[in-house]
Image (tube, rainbow, N blue to C red; front, side, top):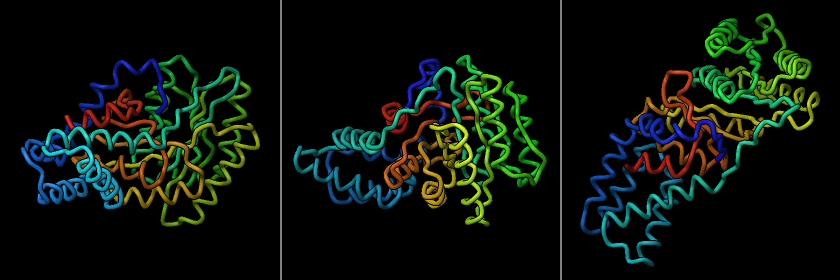
Length: 311
């Protein structure tokens, strides 16, 4: 995934802390399974049940088990520890199959991040963390309040912008979201701002209208700044499990999502949703949210993620 050198040093500990509930939960029960001295059909069935309960999803679990059974046959895997090692390797392979580095901002051109996701997933918080993340690396940041549907959304973004120390460009509630995005890119070009992060609406009950609105926002950004948005980031709530997969599919089909941010990972005992979204949607994870603080955003790393899960 994308590497941001400034934050690499704090990744492992942050990720381990954020995954504590998951590691102690269903994946903790996996550890008990791995202590067995032999492998029988009951072990395979228990492994399947635990992975599904951990939100890895039926389809992804079937893929993992198919690969593991084949390896067990070919490599003569006969005990839990060897199975654990093989599972870790296959989990990493799933996460790596769609690796796509986060393109770094280029000097002289605003780097536009279009952030999408349903209301309540932690989108605004993730935007604030992302703004803080770029600020800490010495970049100037502008937030665009293009969720004009709710006055509260604009106020919330302004409050988070203040906390993160970054300006927020906003229009009146009910205005045109595409106009907000347009003005934000214009302001960035005029002021030499490095990073523009665009918040968007997420009211899925009016799905068709919302997707049209998001497509329009994207088109306006593309016309104004060829090559932008350089990143379309879908924020998913890790605690919603398989429902998150359904939501994600809607957005990926509508706005060509490039990366995922998995929010609230510290709030779930399941965590396996990471494998399901990558495997079934073919979209890589760029960031994970591991807490409430502005600095609780970790650059995703497949090796560290699997190591933190399996202990």
